[in-house]
Length: 134
Image 1 (tube, helix red, strand yellow):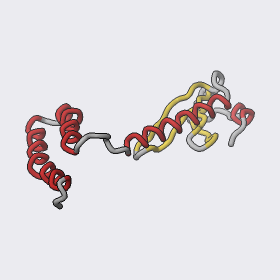
Image 2 (tube, one colour; image 1 turned 120 degrees about the vertical axis):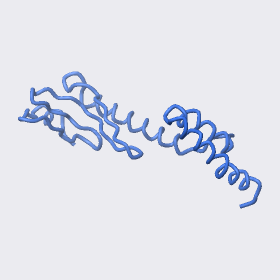
Image 3 (cartoon, one colour; image 1 turned 90 degrees about the vertical axis):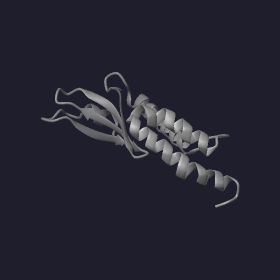
Image 4 (cartoon, helix red, strand yellow; image 1 turned 60 degrees about the vertical axis):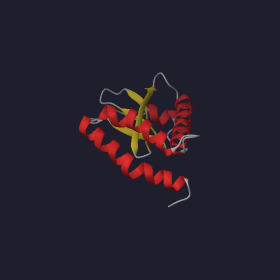
């Protein structure tokens, strides 16, 4: 882990660069010499990147506290995404998916095709599994 003094002594180069302070916490040093705290972490297959503030405004201690908060928040989000929907049947979840994800983002003919596939292939199978038939 870099100390505040080591971070303060980082010098600007011909290109901006990142210096690793701790896992997921970096200091970006720009060509102008300004330094910023950067949070960067892969979470559930995507890169989460956030600027936490400038080195002159945010201390190392504050940046580490923000890092802890962000990591905790990402863990909570991951836990919520992996939880099954309480009290909802598969058909209700499928209907919600159609309204929220499919209809706004898909052309009309493809929406109809997705609905037909759900009605014909997926929903009858899920109802059979609920009644004990497989």
